[in-house]
Amino acid sequence: MRFEGRTAIVTGGSRGIGRAVCLELARGGANVVLCYAGNETAALETARSVEELGAKALTVRCDVSDAAQADALVKAAVEAFDRVDILVNNAGITRDNLLLRMSEADFDAVISANLKGTFLCMKAVSRLMLKQRYGRIVNLSSVVGLRGNAGQVNYAASKAGVVGMTKSLAKELAARGVTVNAVAPGFIETDMTAALTEQARAAALGSIPMGRLGTAEDVAKAVAFLAGDSAAYITGQVLAVDGGMAM
Ligand code: NAP
Image (cartoon, rainbow, N blue to C red; front, side):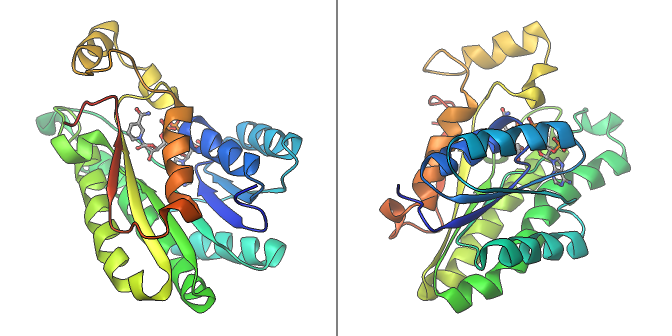
């Protein structure tokens, strides 16, 4: 049980990659605090699955782009489990459009949830991790943040920003036993990618050397590796989990 006695916060743990991360950490014995934006039914379903694995779960409704709510999320985790060892910044949204058609509101919404949300949660948890002299922060970037993608100027900016924040905070916290890394998934089958047209899916598939889309579990295993003690000497890195897409 590699996460026995550890407490993990997973933002956006109700569905998709976040849910798979919650289950992977629970399999290792972690207490899992999962937050969600509005889909309570899905969040409670994840919590139930965590408990069925013999781990403890706490479900918190929290908009990560709101500083007070991000602080309250960390506070709830500490009240329930005394400490926070792992933070997985997974919550994210897309509002795709070509630049000329992209509204300012859609730009702001994506930057706010994906980039500012990651900043606020890292800020909320950092003091505690410094005090503990232990912490693992894993941020969800994307292949799109590394390579760009037509129709995703806002999303690419947010995910490239996550890479810059990851490396910067890694340097700030390295000497105190806290690692900060990112995972950059490629094309993963979740609700986020379900809306893509058959044509877009075929095009994406053509750009994946391994010839298949990824699963949420593929990403969760990489997140769990970076969140565990096997990755103790790894910080400031971006691990692509994309079937070779970003090579
Ligand atoms: P998803 O299935 O759409 O799930 C998104 C999750 O984020 C949900 O749990 C949602 O909560 C939560 N969320 C959204 N906005 C939030 C907010 N403001 N505050 C708190 N929670 C919020 O997404 P996914 O595909 O699993 O993606 C997870 C992460 O991986 C994202 O950061 C995404 O950018 C990244 N990623 C995904 C892919 C891919 O191909 N799927 C590729 C690269 C990177 P509710 O359930 O309550 O709505």
